[in-house]
Image (cartoon, rainbow, N blue to C red; front, side, top):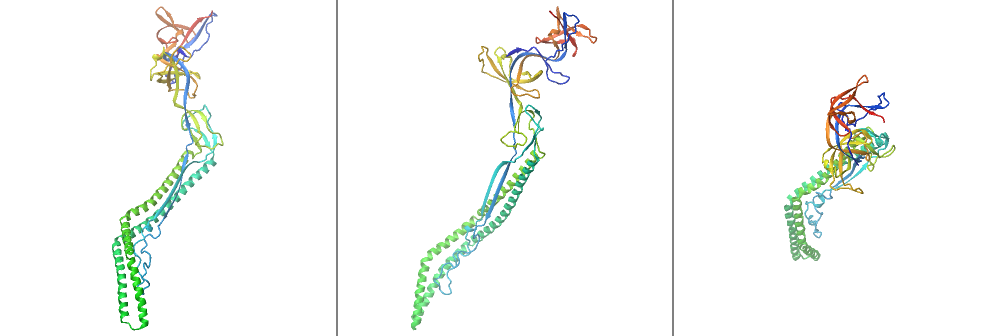
Length: 507
């Protein structure tokens, strides 16, 4: 609806209060039965004229949630040294020389060279993080819907029993995390020692690989040469022997030596290949010794870092818990009017249910429809005056934030445009849906003396008022009248607080 403002929007400057429409005191003071008089007071404020439209306000809601979500991390780390790491020598005894007395067979291939692969330490690390809310039980709820609160006010209290149980749980998580950290640090130290031993062994074996390979090749050749020398000696003994029994033994020996030579010759290539492979492996571990050391150490280092992070998280949880609820009070996170309460005494706080909802003082708006006849007086960022039906004696402020480009007419022939106003000053309790009257100011005189138009009389070109005197009498005072909005007028010639009389006759 639309109406032309016929009121005064005033700020009582001395007290710093909000605007107020003129309040009239009424009393019958005339002794004549045919004449009555009303008293009005000269006040200071703003004389305003404009277009007024009405609509329901919209108040956005802010939610205060239970956000004490703690992260507990369980971490286990184990470090195992590989079998055979750094041990010298291959398989003992190596190749048998057919049981020849005094030979004992070839020494282990690559004797003194590391088993290599078995010397790499292995680290196993596992960690698991999970979020959970500690269970806090509401003791007392200190707010109700429609109540105004300030940020930091106590709105709920928590039972001491649930606080102690939650504190014990969070403290236990800190202790467990610190114990896991100590274990990880011990394992880290042990793994570094083992990795250093393996590293030194690989360096030593790699540096000696060529000498070991050459010695192995010489040993293979020497063993075969020794067999040929033994066979030659046996053949000479056989040629010079005349004893039948001795001849039989020599024949057996010669046959055995030939078999051993045949076996050694046939396996010579594979023995030389095994020696070459052992040499290549030793050289490879020499070239990669630093990388293998780093891998082993870094694995266990990561486990210690995760364990340290678990300790930091657990301590942060404990600190957050103490900061949130150490004194057993839940504090208001916002200032404003409570629009909802999520809990009652005995309830357990949950992250899924808001503790309280507040009217958001930063997002109170009202959208009114302004007719096409009046839309020209409305501009973005214009200041407007607002009064609420629930607070009829007060005027508040706002500004135009949006003017809709699409018209609305509904079932009416009148075309209107939606205009959104942001409310910047408002009463202590303001709920969504309350009716607001928005005045778009077309003219305004600020900080002037004003009085009701009815208190002013005109004689020719002169204007007068009747001022009540202290003794109850009255005097006619000449005044200068300025801007009038049709209901009240700017006035000069009287003082703020003067009582003026409006006279009329009863029919």
